[in-house]
Image (cartoon, rainbow, N blue to C red; front, top):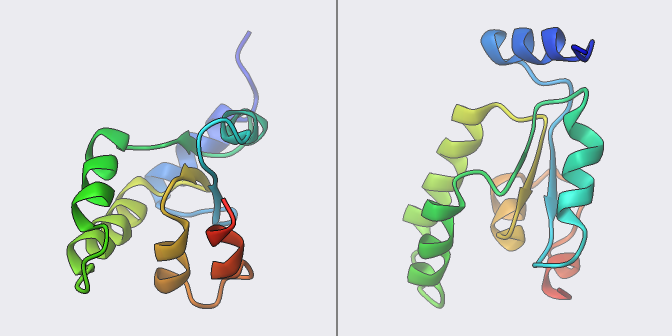
Length: 111
Protein backbone atom coordinates (compact mmCIF):
# COMPACT_ATOMS: atom_id res chain seq x y z
CA UNK A 1 0.00 0.00 0.00
CA UNK A 2 1.35 3.42 -0.95
CA UNK A 3 1.26 5.96 1.85
CA UNK A 4 -0.54 9.13 0.81
CA UNK A 5 2.11 11.44 2.32
CA UNK A 6 4.91 10.34 -0.01
CA UNK A 7 3.86 12.57 -2.94
CA UNK A 8 3.89 15.65 -0.72
CA UNK A 9 7.30 14.68 0.70
CA UNK A 10 8.83 14.24 -2.76
CA UNK A 11 7.35 17.51 -4.04
CA UNK A 12 8.72 19.46 -1.07
CA UNK A 13 12.20 17.98 -1.56
CA UNK A 14 12.16 18.86 -5.27
CA UNK A 15 10.90 22.39 -4.59
CA UNK A 16 13.37 22.70 -1.68
CA UNK A 17 10.63 23.78 0.73
CA UNK A 18 9.95 22.70 4.28
CA UNK A 19 6.64 22.52 6.12
CA UNK A 20 8.55 23.32 9.31
CA UNK A 21 12.14 23.05 10.53
CA UNK A 22 12.82 20.92 13.60
CA UNK A 23 15.83 19.24 15.13
CA UNK A 24 15.48 16.47 17.67
CA UNK A 25 18.64 16.58 19.75
CA UNK A 26 19.49 13.62 21.94
CA UNK A 27 22.17 11.22 22.97
CA UNK A 28 21.92 7.49 22.33
CA UNK A 29 18.91 5.68 23.85
CA UNK A 30 16.88 8.88 24.43
CA UNK A 31 14.05 8.21 21.96
CA UNK A 32 15.39 9.83 18.81
CA UNK A 33 14.40 6.84 16.65
CA UNK A 34 10.83 7.03 17.98
CA UNK A 35 10.60 10.75 17.23
CA UNK A 36 11.91 10.13 13.71
CA UNK A 37 9.31 7.38 13.19
CA UNK A 38 6.54 9.74 14.29
CA UNK A 39 7.48 12.35 11.70
CA UNK A 40 8.63 10.18 8.80
CA UNK A 41 5.18 9.13 7.56
CA UNK A 42 4.19 12.64 6.45
CA UNK A 43 7.35 14.75 6.66
CA UNK A 44 10.88 14.57 5.33
CA UNK A 45 12.66 13.19 8.38
CA UNK A 46 16.07 11.59 8.84
CA UNK A 47 17.67 9.91 11.81
CA UNK A 48 21.30 10.99 12.19
CA UNK A 49 21.85 11.94 8.53
CA UNK A 50 25.47 11.52 7.47
CA UNK A 51 26.54 10.29 10.91
CA UNK A 52 29.65 8.70 9.35
CA UNK A 53 30.87 12.24 8.59
CA UNK A 54 29.37 14.11 11.53
CA UNK A 55 30.63 11.98 14.43
CA UNK A 56 34.33 12.23 13.44
CA UNK A 57 33.86 16.01 13.00
CA UNK A 58 32.40 16.28 16.50
CA UNK A 59 35.36 14.38 17.96
CA UNK A 60 37.91 16.29 15.89
CA UNK A 61 36.54 19.70 16.90
CA UNK A 62 35.94 18.97 20.60
CA UNK A 63 37.53 21.66 22.72
CA UNK A 64 38.79 23.73 19.79
CA UNK A 65 38.28 27.48 19.92
CA UNK A 66 37.59 27.71 16.17
CA UNK A 67 34.71 25.38 15.36
CA UNK A 68 33.98 26.93 11.96
CA UNK A 69 34.67 23.77 9.90
CA UNK A 70 32.19 21.85 12.03
CA UNK A 71 29.62 24.67 11.99
CA UNK A 72 29.98 25.09 8.22
CA UNK A 73 29.45 21.38 7.61
CA UNK A 74 26.29 21.28 9.76
CA UNK A 75 24.90 24.42 8.06
CA UNK A 76 25.66 23.12 4.55
CA UNK A 77 24.20 19.69 5.32
CA UNK A 78 20.98 21.23 6.59
CA UNK A 79 20.63 23.35 3.43
CA UNK A 80 21.48 20.42 1.16
CA UNK A 81 19.19 17.76 2.68
CA UNK A 82 16.08 19.96 3.17
CA UNK A 83 14.65 17.95 6.06
CA UNK A 84 11.52 18.98 7.88
CA UNK A 85 12.86 17.09 10.91
CA UNK A 86 16.29 15.66 11.69
CA UNK A 87 17.77 13.84 14.67
CA UNK A 88 21.20 15.17 15.56
CA UNK A 89 23.82 14.82 18.30
CA UNK A 90 25.22 18.34 18.04
CA UNK A 91 22.69 20.37 20.00
CA UNK A 92 24.86 23.21 21.24
CA UNK A 93 25.99 24.14 17.74
CA UNK A 94 22.36 24.24 16.55
CA UNK A 95 21.67 27.20 18.83
CA UNK A 96 24.61 29.02 17.25
CA UNK A 97 23.33 28.32 13.73
CA UNK A 98 19.71 29.11 14.54
CA UNK A 99 19.75 31.81 17.24
CA UNK A 100 16.01 32.49 16.91
CA UNK A 101 15.14 28.92 17.86
CA UNK A 102 13.04 28.35 20.95
CA UNK A 103 15.31 25.79 22.57
CA UNK A 104 18.03 27.00 24.88
CA UNK A 105 21.62 25.78 24.95
CA UNK A 106 21.13 24.82 28.60
CA UNK A 107 18.67 22.15 27.53
CA UNK A 108 21.38 20.57 25.39
CA UNK A 109 23.97 20.63 28.16
CA UNK A 110 21.84 18.45 30.44
CA UNK A 111 22.10 15.34 28.25
